[in-house]
Every structure is written in C-alpha cells, then in structure tokens.
Amino acid sequence: MFRIGIGHDMHRLVAARPLVLGGTLIPFDCGSDGHSDGDALTHAIADAILGALCEGDLGVHFPDTDPQWKDANSMELLGRVVWLAHERGFEIVNVDCNVMLERPKLREHIDGMRANVAAALNVDIAWVSVKAKTGEGLDAVGRGEAVTVQAIVLLRQS
Ligand SMILES: [Zn+2]
Image (cartoon, rainbow, N blue to C red; front, side, top):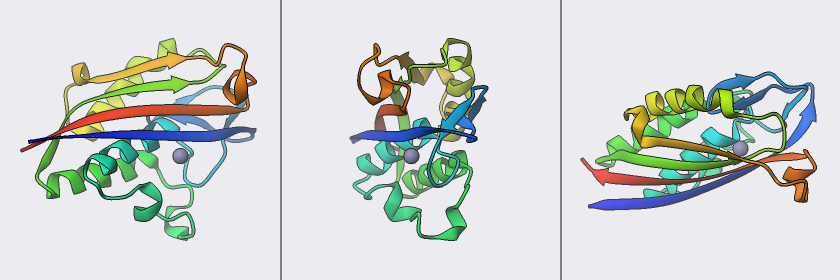
C-alpha cells in the first residue's frame, strides 16, 4: 500500500539569522526567521510525511510554545518524523521539492541538501529531488522577503 503527502512552508528572511535549507548552512546576509533553525525545506518534507501518515503537522508534534524545540536542529525533527513513519510500518519511496528563493542562487548547494535529506529519510540520494526557483521579482519571494518550499512525498508499506 502507498500513501502520498504534501508539505508547504514559508519563512520570513531577516538579518542576523542563519540561512539553513535541507540541513545545509548557506552563506548569505540574512536567514529564516522563526522557531528552531528555520529550515523551511526540512519542515516542508517533515510536514509531507506527517500528511501521508494523516498525523497532523509539525506544529502538533513540536509546538513552538515548547522551549524544548527553540533553535532545534530541524534535521533532528525530520529524523523523529521518519522514525514515526517506520513505527507506522511505512518507508519513504521518494520526495520532490521546490525551493522558492530569490537570492542567493542555490545550484551549488543542491546536491549537499539532497545528501542530507536522503540520509535523514534513509533512502538513496537518487530518490530525493530538490529544485530551486526564484519569484521572478514578484511577490514576497521575489522581493527577497521570504523563502517558500513545497514538498511531496510517497510512502510505501514496508
Ligand atoms: Zn518552518
């Protein structure tokens, strides 16, 4: 049996914050605001897995009112979500993601993000797709005010 899930995340970009995507620290003059490390790619993937499991969203499992998760490493949260999927008898088949960010260019970081995500999902890197897009100068992404991520994941009963 298969399950499919969709995830979405958006973070405001602000000064004096690290820009972390897929567990990769990307050198830039601003980064994601928000609880934890603001890793929008990892959050969207975790939400997609929780969606496929019909287990709510990240906020249910790791509430931002809980100081335990302040500045948490999002890859660790993703690891816990993958563990939950395994507990429910599912393994990850593949994941496909769109990262919408005006600047900086992500091309040189894509394979590093894919490797980090693949390790967290316990799948081969060939099953992890990360695509980078800009906002074409339009909307909050286009103005450089936000990073937005879409993720879709397929689970298979193991
Ligand atoms: Zn997030």
